[in-house]
Length: 326
Image (tube, rainbow, N blue to C red; front, side):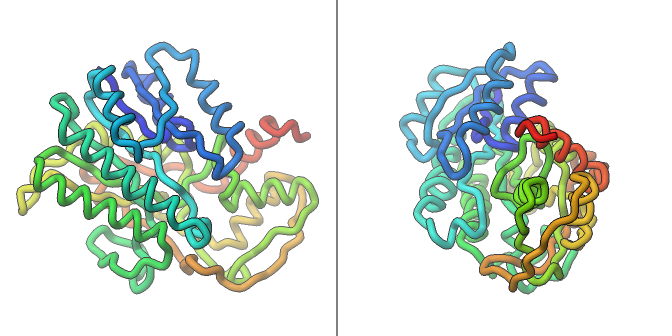
């Protein structure tokens, strides 16, 4: 039996694949290796997985239902960790159809795969803190209304949750959605602020600081997040009051950090001060994110342990080595 990990060449997906292999699971990874950011980074992540016993990889697009179903004919799948998606809030403003294909059709293809399978016990899938949109106070709770998204990306992630809820009722297979809060760490994503800031500061370029630095984010270190993903995978939901085995959890650090302090921590780790270019809030952004993680703590034993003062220096150290910086 094997665990299917979609988005296996991605940041979180590659880490989850390693963690599953570390505990003795067989892993089938899939990814379309799109060029939203440098494919060489995705290839490098896959290179670390390629020689590991129990890992196999297939390049495919999850929105291609026939291709995806071919995987289930080749392997006996016990669980699915669905992390593949078109990421990025701002990118969705200019490239909306990419989100419809990957996040909506792709998620539906995964649901169809699971509902026709006789062996899959649990689907864990990636949602996002972006679903909270506007109108909610922090810390965000899973009980909050999430019907006012500020980006298409957020709307697609909320749609994924609703599709999963419907399928849980129609076809009675367990599902857990995870609302990730700004995940960072080594092998991370070049489109994220921590990567852009580190790269710019090291190379003497100015950084763009939105809303004049008056923003707060719940930055979540990758090791903590992966531990939470596996804990959720190992604790499938029971039926709720409506008879559906579906739930959604926040998964984050539950400690919002001011953007200016976040930049200071990067500056200290790099050993250089940033040249800052202060700008207005960007479309699709929100002022603050903060996760109430009490639900996943109680149900799965999740705990977030890593502060940005610990996590950012680890990222900067990796970044230096990966890019040959001194």
